[in-house]
Every structure is written in structure tokens, then in C-alpha cells.
Amino acid sequence: MDLYDELPEPPRFPAPAVSGTDAAPPAGDPAGKRRADTADLPASCEHRHQEKKVCKGFHKTRKCTWGLVSVKAHVAERRGEREELQDAHTICDLSQECEPLPAHISRLSYFAVFDGHGGSRAARYAAHNLHRNLAKKLPQGDGSSMEKAMKRCLLDAFKQTDEEFLKQAASQKPTWKDGTTAICVLVADNILYIANLGDSKALLCRINEETQKPTVLTLSREHNPTQYEERMRIQRAGGNVRDGRVLGVLEVSRSLGDGQYKRCGVISTPDVKRCPLTPSDRFVLLACDGLFKAFSPEEAVTFILTHVQEESPPVEEGLCDLDAPYESACQRLATEAVRRGAADNVTVLLVHIQH
Image (tube, rainbow, N blue to C red; front, side, top):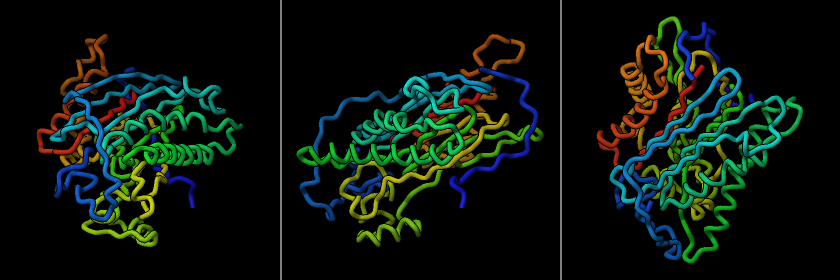
């Protein structure tokens, strides 16, 4: 069995000519990760916390450059119909966090989206700590077993982050019961390492240089309790699945936090995939499930490509910012998801790959 679910590379085509640089939801709310019905849980698990106001829209841009390609990330957040924005995200250059870098790697970048439920604390904690734990565990060897070591450090970083948050949550009175999904992409030179828990997604847009048609590669695998292997693990641990949810409440079968469900088979072990970048790749899209309740993966990628094509300046204009259309597309995609009726929080993180 392969160490990774590695995505195959397509036939190589010539490089393109153009270069560029919760508070818990209301009872019966189908969009929520966790239903308000907590009859299966002890009353002592209830918690209250002070909410802070969060603006409806938000965007940020940072850039990391190495070797053959550069990547530029844009993020958009929308509250949807929720009172609180429970999502969080991270964009950082791990080259500055990890010194020295692992052997045979010149640059490292990290992008992540966390979709919180039951509150925002688990998502914020993971956004602040997961990449730091990852940087401490990155391999420093000669590179002969780098692939195995990269997977191990991702698994260990998730485990440590979950354990540390649960310890902090258990020390509170009343106990915090926040949880979060996670979708993380680590870019090591021109290799993507993807780790995910729950139902957020990462997609890669790859263009066929002969037909100019896009292929959408799904880089992550959803974890929900209706899947056979996930349901069997939950049942073996003494839990049950009702109405497609753990104990009839929690919609995902893997997460960070959610301490009251860990005894029921909910785990923090991510799926890890490896995907080499090619000259045909245009962008990586990371998003929480709020986006995909309004868009299919193919529709989301087509929306971005169509907007980028419409907004891109003519080649003869030369000095125009060729990345500006991606920033605009990121904002418009999140806004359109809410317009289409996505009641959940929507976070979109778009990583433009520039060759």
C-alpha cells in the first residue's frame, strides 16, 4: 500500500506563455455541524462565552516565492446567516518559522481553513497553533525518507494540537465543547501535502494545455459518520449514528476538539495526500462546507476561471497586476455563495499558482 493517496500527474504539456508573478445552530438547522439537541450529553458540558462582533466581509493577501513558481493567497470570509463567524484561517511562510529547513527543501508555505462548530475557540486555537506545532516537527534528515517523515510530522502536529486544546478546554468551568474541521495545504517547493479532517475541501485546478479545459482534482476526503468505515469505528467505540450524525448531533466523524465525542469514536487523525505541482496548475481552492452547500466543486472552479478571464487585462497592457482578478474572484465567490442561500459561515482561501 502506498504511503500517500498520491494524485497522478497528467501528461506534461508546454508551460503557458503568460507568466505572473458556533454558538450551536438553532435546533433542526441542517447547515450546522452540531445540532442544538444535546440530550445525549451531560448538562455540565454546556458553556457560555462572550461573543465579539465580526464584520461581514474580510480579505487578506500574502505572497510566498520559491524556485520555479510563486503562490499568492487571497481569503474571503462571510458570516452568512450566523450571529458569529466561527471560521478561522492561516496563511504563512513556514520558511521563517522553521530554521534550518528540512534537507532538499528551499521554501515552505502553509495555508489552512478551519470551520468551527459549537463556538469559535477550537478554530481560532488551531489557526494559531497547528502550523507552529508542524514547524517544530518537520524532518531535518538527509531526505532519503522525506515523504514518510512529512506524513508523520503532519499526523503528529494534528495529534498534539488536539490534545493541547482538549486539555485547555477541560480546565474551563464549564468545559468548552468547541470543535473544528481542518483543511491544510503545505507547499514544499513544488510539492503539495494536504491534510484534512471533517468536511472542508481542497481543490486543484489543472488546465489541459491542448484543449484549454480545466480538470478539477479533489485533494481531500470528507469524513462524515454515514461512511461505512467511519460509522463502524464510531459503533465499535460505543457511539451511534442517528440522522447522519454522531449521537444525532455531530455532523462530522473527525475533528479537532469536540472532547465530549472523542469517547464515541470521533478522532483527530487526518487523511494526508501528496500532489506534485505541474506547469498546468492554476490555483488551489480551500473552503469550508458553507461554500459547497451553494456550489459543486466544478461550479466553484468554473466560477473562478470565468471571472479571472473576464477581469484579466490584455497582454499588451504589460504592467497590470495579473493577480488582481484572482483576488476579485475570491471575494465574489464567497459573496455569491451567501447570495445563493448558504446560511452557514463561508470561508474561501484561493491560492494562485504563478509560473
